[in-house]
Length: 421
Image 1: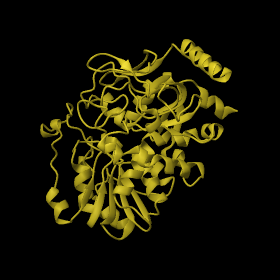
Image 2: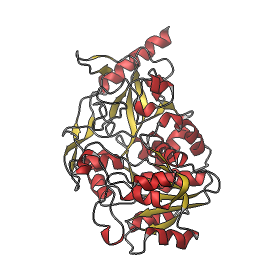
Image 3: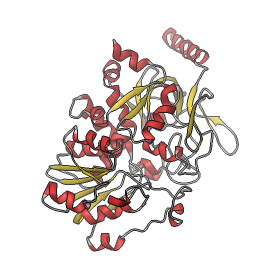
Image 4: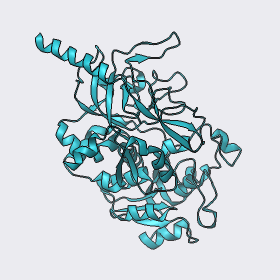
């Protein structure tokens, strides 16, 4: 009993001391700022007002990553409101638990899936946590700090609240080991499972030949995942030489989509064939043309390319983001998510398509084990760079310019300090 009283006193002390919070806030197209924001509460906003969230926890954020999906908002390509606290890739230390949390404890270091899921609805019970039916009144599925995804406060901050903690959180088995491997483990919240999901849904397996469209962080994670799954050849296409060089650094072949040489011809030069077993779209709705058209947006370009180069009967995984509203689209139809797809080609070739958010919980524990047992060096593949919270606005600018880097924010300086020891 004295132990429990002491634990309760410590929790109260943490709450009293940790009243400060800062976060990365979207201020309009092309602009983010680090601002003071409210310290999180174990509360849920409802139409009838706030109510207690006793199944939730408050995290001290150890790492939180900048994602290409965040860039879509920051570029003004969504309907994101100003004042939105960004960030859906979160790793943290539990500092406060609601009374209904049974299996997570203060001091646990945990990975937070970007999907917010209740664990109770039909979809969650089927493992489809990316389309939970109870966490977003507007549509299935929710995420932290993202437009149209339920209004949940983002995690590019010093502290954040996580609901349904027992269901959602992945606890790392050893704290000191987790901190040593944090540059890899931080990618479990989104891009590593997302890239892996793209590879799995494209049917990648031992001996597969794969084309990955896009060498941003998700594309690099997908390429590394293809290698983990046993692919014989992984070819990555992009418009940015630095990103192609990063893909080459861990054994991928590459195609430069700025080249006047058609994609099929470049693939044939590498593989001896213009078709591959599997295709993965890691670009999404801000796709550009190829060759002389590479400076112009063509939102259906990647999907049409993948239908062209994926063999008959093959599959295409689509972890790249497509939206229902794109106010910045150059084509009128694309403003409402309508693209000029060659669906007839895909039908004629009996191709399979897999879209939607990755259900992170389906993959993250096994991928954690692959990291901890050194089956993959995902931080190296994605070129992780740790930065401070105040460096985030400049990192957004660098990322938008095409930097071949996965920026990981260390809000408290705790991870970089650990690395120096």
